Image (cartoon, rainbow, N blue to C red; front, side, top):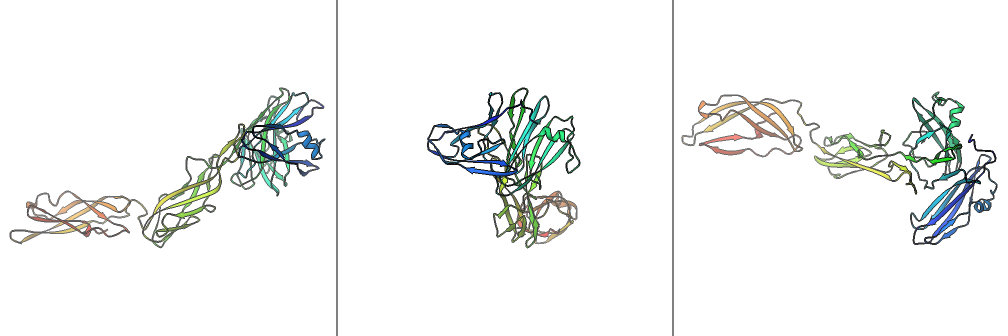
Length: 438
């Protein structure tokens, strides 16, 4: 119920300018509905010279298609052969008295995920018109969800091939028909937002043109509503979990590839992504399943070139929806490395020292009891800090057996280096990791 004055009729207009330095060849095709079925007609090509403009004369186009007296809406598709971005377009409809002007923002129609309209209004004489067109050769199912303070309302929509559907949101409010969840839009609600998605959810890919505008017959105003293209955002960058990952030699583990969307939802892209390993001699990966080949480090990478990026279809000319596709991410990890940065248990260490005298060759023996304190993982080995808890060293040795000593313990990596020797006051001190027992 658009509430325009009686006998108000509209005429379509479309003007194109070639802003490039080369000829642009334009092939117009009209799509319209008749008796519930989609109709189309491809018209003769037009050639537009560089820097020139042309009124596409929609009346002549409609006459050439045999629909000069069409009472309804029509979609004008222009296939432009020329430089990218060569066509600058202005289109819409205007009544005979030039009182009401409905601007239609020309834009490309691409495969995308769900789309949203940021605002709709039915208050103070406003109404919101929504137009959907399915450009595909097969039918598609959609769910148009209206969000408002205190709830939401789901409207299932089926569009056959090339079919157009137009509706006003005021009609959905006035009809008071419950949706599949039993919800209705209360009559007191006059504003909100909306989202068009596939029946499988917001990430399902769809191919559809969505147009929405808020008009007010009493005020003779009409405003274009920008579309939101839902998709992946950055930051945060898409990520691999676990990061870092770890697996035993000959073992298997699983990681996931996740992207954050502008809606706040995290989507698992693991199964549909392309995976690779920086070192297949260390680790291999397929659909998130990791196999440890040999001890060492590797980086796993995942990418999904079809994942849509978030954006907004607005301005003149409006940005494509989605603005781009493709996400990727990576995560380092290790095969045959500790799975955590701490040890599950630490065992006390006993060391027996023999210090022979350089003068007489007669030595003394002493036992040292060491107690483990802390450990730390430095990406190559575990460092265990040991402190002397008791000893039987002769008092003449002073503090030789006291204090703390640091021992390097390799876990799942090559053996530690040989023990080292140094001389101090005619005695030989032995130290190193060879006596460590974990």
